[in-house]
Image (cartoon, rainbow, N blue to C red; front, side, top):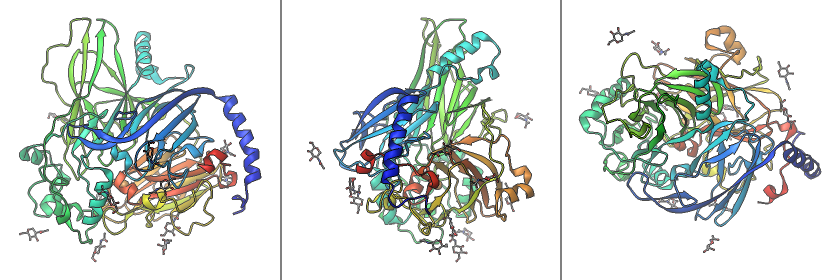
Length: 611
Ligand SMILES: *[C@@H]1O[C@H](CO)[C@@H](O)[C@H](O)[C@H]1NC(C)=O
Ligand SMILES: *[C@@H]1O[C@H](CO)[C@@H](O)[C@H](O)[C@H]1NC(C)=O
Ligand SMILES: *[C@@H]1O[C@H](CO)[C@@H](O)[C@H](O)[C@H]1NC(C)=O
Ligand SMILES: *[C@@H]1O[C@H](CO)[C@@H](O)[C@H](O)[C@H]1NC(C)=O
Ligand SMILES: *[C@@H]1O[C@H](CO)[C@@H](O)[C@H](O)[C@H]1NC(C)=O
Ligand SMILES: *[C@@H]1O[C@H](CO)[C@@H](O)[C@H](O)[C@H]1NC(C)=O
Ligand SMILES: *[C@@H]1O[C@H](CO)[C@@H](O)[C@H](O)[C@H]1NC(C)=O
Ligand SMILES: *[C@@H]1O[C@H](CO)[C@@H](O)[C@H](O)[C@H]1NC(C)=O
Ligand SMILES: *[C@@H]1O[C@H](CO)[C@@H](O)[C@H](O)[C@H]1NC(C)=O
Ligand SMILES: *[C@@H]1O[C@H](CO)[C@@H](O)[C@H](O)[C@H]1NC(C)=O
Ligand SMILES: *[C@@H]1O[C@H](CO)[C@@H](O)[C@H](O)[C@H]1NC(C)=O
Ligand SMILES: [Cu+2]
């Protein structure tokens, strides 16, 4: 592979000069954020634990940026462990060394070391950032990114209302979106959970609380309510195994945890302390209140929220009682707005929504788990009033969604990804230059996962004894965990779940966004997407498919395999991770490295090479 020159120092020096010129001439100098990471005590849900604080707080501060700016994020690691910081969904155009993946784009940031991330905010909208070292995001290192769009950018407001006054109110709200970070949380550290899961030889898919912007409580759901919330699928699993109840935490009992994913592995559940899957100890933390103050009667009032799925495992359904919401952007990009009552949110997803505040009062903002392994729900509060009169008296409100994510009535409309139409359509390559079929698997125990039969555990990727891929790209693909592409080409990733049972996997690609051009139930007997599209055209959309930085593969059931075709354009040369965003799956090996644009491999600036 000639493109990876053995000695690229000269090329490097030449290109460095060119790059700095581009960066400084085209982009305004933007903000510098100083982030100091410490390992300290915090009580997000009323239970104190050790976790990562950023500038002394949890969650990490919101990074607010204007589109076009050059951003600098200075990370001071004052923790006993190493770390890195990833900017989720940011395209890192021309700055692949700031993507924050240990072993792939940089060396780990050791204790007392400082790393300077620098990137251009070419995009706009809702993004987020989080630690990418092992399971550290579970220890609380995550925060929101808001990139304000350029003023002249066309906005989709006229698809919501034709009334100038309403459009003005919407535009005003959308200029000040409020991030709502949604996450599942445990009292045990990520390291502790990994250790226990290795000892027990199983994944541990059970959480203590749901947090809204870092706040929540441990709610123990009574046994009869848990039973009433079982979905038909959960009820079937219990029935098939002669089990009557979920555990008091709302989780599948220890006897079933591994059985549903790795049926042939002998587990050792006896090593697990009872709080991990079974015993629920209630605890009260604070509740997030989204307050909109002092409205003036007659004013058109709107609220913009950036919903961020900072989940480690759970997938959830979001809703606000008695308030339909307009989804106007997905993963940062404007879409043709959809008016819905409920939105399913998966790990890493962002939904930007507009809420019309037309009935002052106090409303639950609901989250319900739709993960088979755990029944769980929680709420924040939306509070708004008129003038100085204060909030309306409290009254019971009507939910759109039940506490298991199923619709409360047949009138409930859910956000539809298949119907997602980008506000700005881009031409999509009609034929892929390369096709990679990836077979998603467990590899032995249920904590061990493979994106293409072969696992790439985070601990292997991060261990520091191999060269950083961006600095020394791999010449061969013999490890089954590396894909190499040429710049400007169109690439298909065909994700195939042909072993069962197989839970859904939210697959996230670093470096740039992808289009989901096809998906289906059953085997994928074709060699390419083109062959498949000729055979089952109804399963493909090559005209106006949804665009995102992560797509979820469908669950495979005992009778149905599934397939998903993701297409992307190689525009940003560099080493990018593609992985499942479920933390235990990422840590357990469900990732691959894509060497995009091998024929235009970026020259890494000396300060990053030396770090
Ligand atoms: C932590 O990072 C430092 C600096 O990059 C490296 O030398 C060390 O091996 C890393 N430690 C572990 C446990 O990976
Ligand atoms: C980090 O800095 C602190 C304060 O200066 C010092 O006490 C500690 O020993 C340092 N740790 C390492 C691993 O360098
Ligand atoms: C987890 O296991 C590793 C390796 O045995 C050990 O170094 C570490 O201290 C353990 N962590 C916890 C929280 O038990
Ligand atoms: C469940 O109970 C029935 C009747 O006692 C028995 O036939 C079946 O084998 C049991 N299934 C399992 C998975 O234990
Ligand atoms: C488990 O073992 C059975 C019987 O040997 C086999 O048919 C099945 O494919 C195995 N399942 C998995 C997920 O390996
Ligand atoms: C919706 O539910 C109502 C009340 O339960 C019922 O009368 C109606 O037929 C349902 N509509 C549809 C389309 O299922
Ligand atoms: C990619 O495929 C398109 C369409 O078949 C073709 O025109 C183009 O030359 C290919 N590019 C490369 C680099 O092979
Ligand atoms: C790659 O996959 C093939 C086929 O499954 C397997 O035989 C081979 O051992 C794998 N290579 C590595 C390095 O794991
Ligand atoms: C995926 O695995 C298959 C078989 O295990 C192997 O033939 C193929 O090369 C792998 N794909 C990549 C992109 O490594
Ligand atoms: C890579 O390809 C894209 C799309 O064709 C192009 O815009 C970009 O300039 C290329 N990058 C390099 C470094 O050649
Ligand atoms: C799954 O497979 C079953 C049995 O083959 C079939 O009846 C069902 O329609 C399939 N489900 C979907 C969503 O295609
Ligand atoms: Cu996964």
